[in-house]
Image 1: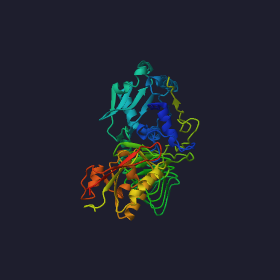
Image 2: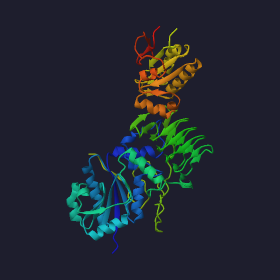
Image 3: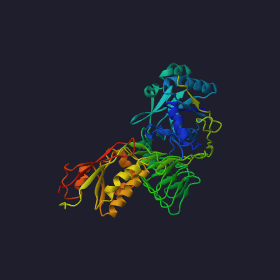
Image 4: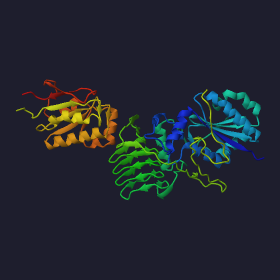
Length: 355
Length: 139
């Protein structure tokens, strides 16, 4: 019997923080210097990494495994306030004949085989199956919607049930919990070194060097593999990108600057003759990973934000061979609804109120 | 004539070494930078803010002391200042020490003790007053 599954991705934490991360990195025109939140306070799963954020990649992975539609919910600071929205969504899906729903509380990057998870869940026959690795729960569960009375009873205990679910799916694949900037940096390095399935968005112009659409590298600049230069980004003469660095879209590395073992986040200008080492740069902010120290520099000659037009995100393929029927989605940004990043066939995100 | 040459000047820089305050700072430092064979230590322990203009000021100061056969070293940068010095590659150009005394001692033949009159300069309004003291063997 064919089991229909849907997905629900919950962005945990304050709406403002989640929205702010997306708003500031989508390259939409802003007035003057954009106000970017501290890097250390970011929701790293919403931060672009090699061309696409973990939210986008998670939705893609769910849909790749036939889990559709996928809804995205930005959770308020008080998780209990989002339960009515979650419940409404579950009731709605149940009414449409959906048998099970995969709920992901977005945080970690985990290369879950959702098909295998669903099979495990169905074979187990439990109401809830949650995913664990050797460090604990991964905030990913499958709910059996046909057992409506059972999951309605859970109500505000829903998220507590992530830890107490009777059925555990032990995952032994690649996981990065993205709890810190260092984790984010580590995921970048792992991806560029092909130690995980996370694929840079762009073209591999030579082994280990990926360029996004419209990226421009001066002929006297050097990009040492493995490295990533995002869409519409410029690397000027004499610059050097090295040691598994990533320069995200709509950025610029000016003449003679060295970027080593670092991430330059979208829409960032790095001035000439500088050396960015073991750091994350976002606009005028620099987080030194070695010292765990973040600065904001109010000097456009050193670091500054760049504003630019919104761009379309290409569909991101998984590294392994995929079935023929995977849809190719364009992902337009939508200034009216920052959470609505996906094409039709996928329900728009909802923002749960904070009170 | 001093036994070991020109005394070492330890000049503490103010909290803000940026475009707003650099001109005043340069004016105050010029007499020392242009002296004969200057041996100068910039004490960065109070510096909280430094921008490209501040870095330019360091470079200009280094150029000036070099023109006069002297040397300029940096001391006691905060972690924040050190990040900026590394970002701008100033750490490759300047010797940087953990303390002003260590920097002064590195000039060689210098006994580090406060036995010379202080020199006070006045930076631009609103900034901290920096204190300079001469360290070296007396006459």
